[in-house]
Length: 254
Image (tube, rainbow, N blue to C red; front, side, top):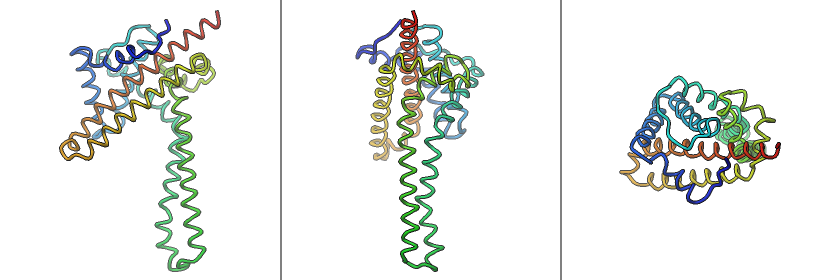
């Protein structure tokens, strides 16, 4: 059944992880895993991703209302989270590869000056080399930012498809998830605009807290909590957009 995103439904969505004490406790477990990622890399966040994926499957596959499942089957969350992490990682290669290379090129002139200054001094050759690397680095960095905007809109249907099928490979079956994305492109765009807006609001709040000494101490805990909360809420938004796309696609076929 298609579910239109209204102000009331959005408010319900934002509040559902705090709906009762059981939901709040499950959110705290996700937050604790997020904080653990500061000590143990990757694995805790894979579990959080798997948990968010399980919520998506409840919506897409089981057709259930939004709820916080039990933190029981850790192996299932680790397996599903690993697949979703892999999908995100592969799709993000066009983003981080040019950005990493661009950053390297931008800082490289600082080291080159030390080696070349004795030979070229401040000659045109040295200035040309520095300018070439600097502008080349900025161009690559900008290219990575451009790709990030594209992937921001195209990753959600691939991510949801992988979660629905519980398959890493499904995330790259573009023909399959593209039909669903195309059937509800407006819903997916609205979903990512809302998700991006929530992210910007929380990041702005984090920046303000970073400026205060007392709240700065609490920042790692708050970042873990906010990251877990956003992962769950945005996953629900994506799952609902994917489910609505499936519904529209079935209507079109019939």
